Every structure is written in structure tokens, then in C-alpha cells.
Length: 463
Ligand code: UN1
Image (cartoon, rainbow, N blue to C red; front, top):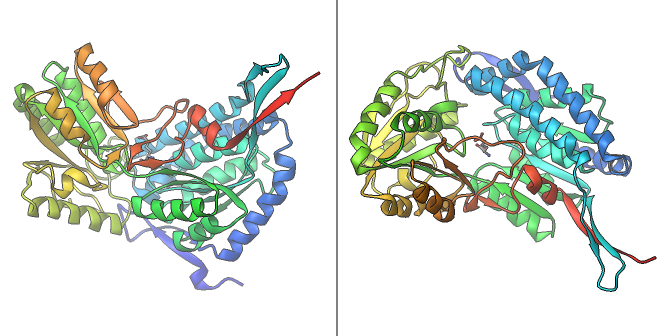
């Protein structure tokens, strides 16, 4: 029997009076049933040839491709991502599924010769039932990049979607169901982290948990999962710097700074939060960057021209405005933006100056369209200040000097480095993840995902 409290309403962040859908608030009983089904399904799924598992993913990719307008439209309506980015994200999800499916044609181990001459090889085997807990800011890319490798390597999955973006993840589930995925192999739950997430992380049937979200929740997840000896992978926040040297192509640097700071309204853990500009180029960069911000198309995310839409929810809106206020209170000056535009949860692209290195805005993650400019004497100073945070997710550098680029590659403290490109973005076939406080455990995607979602056994064979 369904009661009113079994369901919740999701509203459109650009037009909060509009309800975009009603979703189930899953209970611990739902988690129990999902884990039971996943355990049963594992018996058959894990024995299936990897190429056969991959075929379900390829078929789901085709379903997503055929439905890109619907899925992207629903994503934009429920969490406010500008439609052109939503479309790109659905296409990315299809690409991730195809990349994972092709794992069938990659090595699943390595062959050696034993010291005594016999054969010894390694073999990757699935872990069992894995739980995935995903955020609202990439509501199809992140569920897909966790689920695709988990499934192809033979695990069965319980996926908990973000409260604020359920419809998008449910489209992913529908695509896999239409592709014929056997029952129990994947169960998708909507609901609260405090019930569903908590139950999944504490259940001894869950062999591994992959989590993307906040630092605070992530550390609870890590403690719960490691204390029962299971595997955990965390992708947390970032406080990502972009360094612009005087020898850089300033126009390209301006474009990258704008995209990195303001696309998706800055709601990416890889967004550009701090921009360090070498003194000789500072005034020029500042002027062109502010011109670019003034020309930004801000507003309705369903308009294909829109570059900066709303924040995803009222609570994000409140948090970001509080972050801006704190930036001001701690002595920062708002050069442009700094307030709501009056349409839904839209906050104008905001650029600060005069922010102290110890101020909240320089150290913490304000998850919105907010960035700060800092003047630096040279690369040494830029790198020192860029590295002086607890996070280490992404970092960018604009320069034409190979020497500077090579030093950055060695010394920048982040898991993802961008030389002459913006701080956000992630190719599907290479590892993605942070160092320092930005993550824990193996990285995601590419070969790193194979390592996380499998265990390696070593097999000695003598004739
Ligand atoms: C990207 O920059 O395209 O939650 C991906 C996030 C990151 C993913 C960023 N885990 O923003």
C-alpha cells in the first residue's frame, strides 16, 4: 500500500512552481530486496561471457542515442543544466557504455613464466554485489561511468540516485531494461542518503561502494565501508585553480576560464574556482574575462543559447548565496555578479577580486557560478598558491612555454591536469579522480575502473 510519504515531488529549478515528477522514497526494505535480487542474479551474470554482458551495454547505448532529446530535456527540467550541456552528457553516457562494452576485447589478466618454468598468470574476477551512490550534478554521466564497468566485469549493482535528479537516472535504467538486462542485475533506487545510502554502505552483502558527493558524507561512507573490510571509492569536492601565464594565448585562456567557472552554473567538482594570472597579463586578462562574462547568456536552461542556468535546487541556491556573502564579509570584492537574477534559482556569474588566500572562497568549495581572480608575480608563486588547499581534483595551466608546462605536470597537486584547456571535462577512456582531500581509493573510468570493480587472482599452472 502506498502512502503519501512514500513519494516525493521534484520541482524545476528555473520555474520552481512546476513539478517535474514524483518519485519513490525507497525504504530499507527496498534496499534489502534489491540486494537479495542482486545476490541471486550474480550467480548467472558473473558466469556469462564478458562479450555477452557487453552487448547489453551497447544496446542500451543505442536506446539512449535514440532518446537524447527526451533524456536531456528531462535533465534540464529537473536540475537546470543548460540543454546543450545536457545533450552532450547523454551522448557521453552512450559513449561510456560503448567503451565499457569493448572491455570484452581487452586483457583480463597478464601472463608470466614461473621461476621454475611453469605458467603463472593473473585473472580479474568480479567482486559480487556493488553499491553505487551518485550525485545530481552529472545525473547520467556519473551513474553510467560507475555502472558500466561494474556490470561488464560481472558484478551486479544497486544504484542509488540523487534526490535532486531522479528522472535522468531512471532513463538510464529504462535503457538497460529495454536492452534486455536480466532482472536483479541492476536495481535503481530513489530516495534519501540517510536511509538508502546508509543501508547500502552498512550491509555486509555489499562488496564495494563507489560514491561521488560531498566530503562530509564521503567520510561517513568511507568509515562505514572500510570498517567492515569492503572496498570503497570516493570522488569528492575540488577547489580547482587555473594558472594563466603572460606567455599564454589570452583569448583561449579567457574562453577556458569562462567555461570552467560558469558552465553548468559552476556545479561541477572540476569547476574553476581560482584564477591566478601572471602580473604582466593581469589587466589584459581581467578586461577580456569581464567582457566575456558580460556577454554571457544567462537564464532559461531549456534555451539552446543559454550558457549559465539556475542552481539545481533551493538549498544549493541558499548555500551559494551564503558563500558569496561570506566572500564579501571576509574582504573579497565582487567585480561582477554576486546576486540572483530573479529568475528561478539563477545566480549571475560572479567574479571576485581581493580574496585572501586564507578566506573561505580560496579554500572551500562554493558549488555555484563563483570564481576569484588573483594576481601573481610568476609561476612559482602561482603554483605555490594553487597547491595550498586541501583539495586536489583538477588544475589548469595556460602557457606557451614547454618548460612551464613540464614543471606543472610534475608539481601541480591534482589528479587531473589540463595544460591549455579548462579544468572540467573527463574523457571516458582514462582515469578520473582526485588526490589529497578530493578522493579516496582507486580512480574511476578507464583502466582504473577495471581495478576497482574486480579482484585479481594469481594462477600457477604446471603441466
Ligand atoms: C566533468 O568535469 O566533466 O561530480 C566531470 C563532478 C565530477 C565529474 C566531473 N565527479 O563534478
